[in-house]
Image 1: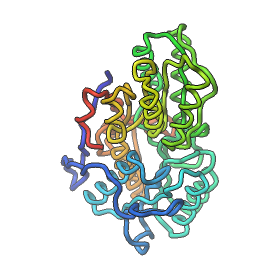
Image 2: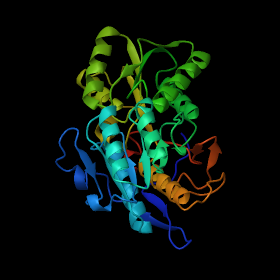
Image 3: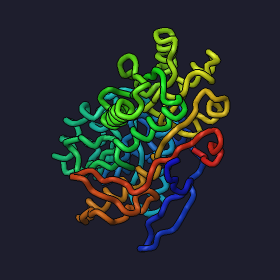
Image 4: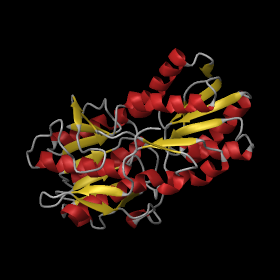
Length: 352
């Protein structure tokens, strides 16, 4: 199992002293309540506060992963008193995210902290933001061109390899498997599955990926449907690697319905909140993840440093667990803490 960092904790900024504070349990909050498809949601509660603000824009709102990210933004704002909030679209669509960013540029925000739904789709609008003097820091987009920095919790290759090791161990290093990604344009998802398959070919020759990579649009229902199709197309399917936090949720539901818990191994990125019941039933075997709340907190710290004309350097702390001694590769900021692995045995230790 990988090294685990402390749960439910942030290292808070305040008068040069780091203090520890707990986050509340994950859930839909604030402006997300009752949001219609495609509508923007915000935890700021006030359009008048947009000018000069640091705004975190997720891939989409309303799922546990990004609810946790919102909590990180809220905690940062509470700890520092800085004008920071969260706003995004409830629609899993790159164009909807671009529209949110365009509106924020027009509102003259000071910084945009974006987790792109499709990195190539936001390049132009992020360039517009930078041309307007807005600080741009992305997450899950290490190959992005139009950003001051991208922030990652770890080296993506290592993350993908570890997922393959966990999958292979449970498949007894033999059999057919499929790979899912939220988007074929998601550089992090593609990096994980590329590294995983490369490692599999070199180390587990009795395993084989079948079919093309499956795109799920970060939608559990689509993952469920795609898994049903895969079970029909590949009757001897023995494993699944998921990438979007919703992938293993949909896959697990399909596995549970088909009563294939003992025949199909399911591993992927998700949150304990979304997967606890399926982990307990055996429909999901393992989830692997990092804390998106801590990533958002670190992004905000980095953005404020840039706004204050401070230099971000290797070895420094971004005041959040997992980012206490960063490294820098070009314009990619990499955290210093490993991912977390969760099975049915330790899922109850996490509240998001």
